[in-house]
Image (cartoon, rainbow, N blue to C red; front, side, top):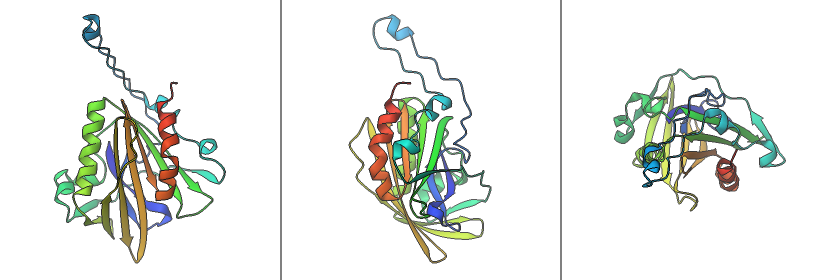
Amino acid sequence: MRLHTITALGLSALAVLALAGCSNGGAPTDAPASSASTSASQEGKNPPVPASLSSVALSKRLLNVSDLGEGYTLKAQRTAQHDDVTVIGCPALEKLGGDAATGSSLDFPRKAKASFTYAGGSDSEVSEELYSDSATKLSKGTSEIFDAMASCPTYQVTSGSTAIDVGTQKTAAPDLADQQWSQVLTYTASGQRSVVKQTAIRTGNVLVVLSGSPGLVDTHVDKALAKAQAAR
């Protein structure tokens, strides 16, 4: 999984560190799913390990406008961002390396993404990202990023010529599925302030991440998880 910069909730000057895939994560680039292990099951000791889902399969489990209800519009995915991003004042994020803020500290190659605006409001957005890998890799990678961000109540990010003050607060995650993480991030730049909630839920070999307006994230996390768990 990768950290990258996005423009949060319509504030064009505000680059946001977020759990994400590549900047063009909405267009799946399929990779072969790993084959299930059969040797242990043949010996009758353990069940086979489920294969990771492909990006195409994940894209079919994303929420869509009809799932969300009236007032939602699908947003076009952003093109790749190339501005250099530097983290200042957060040793845990800095330790992950410069690429942790822009894109290559951790990598879950099977992914899909969709973003939505609610009622046309520039400050009411929600995005969903789905990833698939082994349960161990999803757990380790997600915990590492959430723990690193939560370890610093405040820090600063520079994106190009823009400086962003970031505040991070760990919040209680809904008690769903196998593992849960949640945090509220506050971004301030050029006198403008934005609040983004991020909730991640791991269910087996699938990770569901919702980011955006706190109320919208809380409203849709249950249905996002239910659709991600649905057999296809």
